[in-house]
Image (cartoon, rainbow, N blue to C red):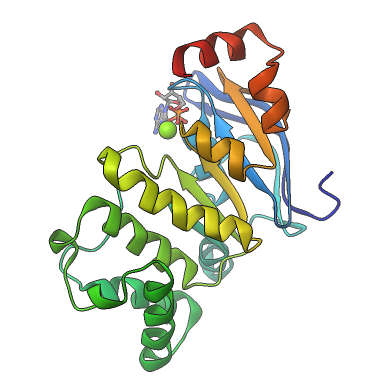
Length: 245
Ligand code: ADP
Ligand code: MG
């Protein structure tokens, strides 16, 4: 598996002060692969995602994107952040910018595109996530599901190499969850490399190539969804699944 690694974490460790939150993490995500990360609250899932685009600095080990160690600062770091799209639970849109401006801004700043070109790309992406007609509106005028789709469009507009999703549907009302998952499913089918932290087991079963189960800072299991859901190996995973399924 993973003959063409796009993301590689080798013996990664991270502490917050005394708290050891990532413990000897080894994870490879191949180009075009979808890896779903699940595990109890506090197990380190968000920190893992944030480490991949260097929102968190690790204390030991290596993280590579497309063969390159993550850059530490400056322009190279800005480029990394554009290459690694991230979608959070809280949509993090600019409240005082329109939907179109939200999607265009980063393209101009981090990709150096002209405004017209960025706007054209933004409209393309908004159309793709089913929000073509929402371009002139402000985030507060949209539902949570629509705002999250704007956030996805914004990340995609940068032409990222990989998309990280950290519990993208956890803040949404139930009826809006599927409209966001549908967009993610579509992306997966189109071959986007994705790391997805989610409790949506339906998504994990249908879209994931692999499930990585985290507990207490470690990846305890890393296997196919079928294998994981039908015969979890560790007591921790069995216990976790018995609570959520
Ligand atoms: P998860 O996303 O799986 O719920 P996190 O990665 O958010 O877990 O957190 C892992 C551990 O690190 C938790 O114990 C959390 O309280 C702690 N933690 C997360 N961020 C910080 C921070 N900025 N400072 C100190 N501790 C943190
Ligand atoms: Mg989290």
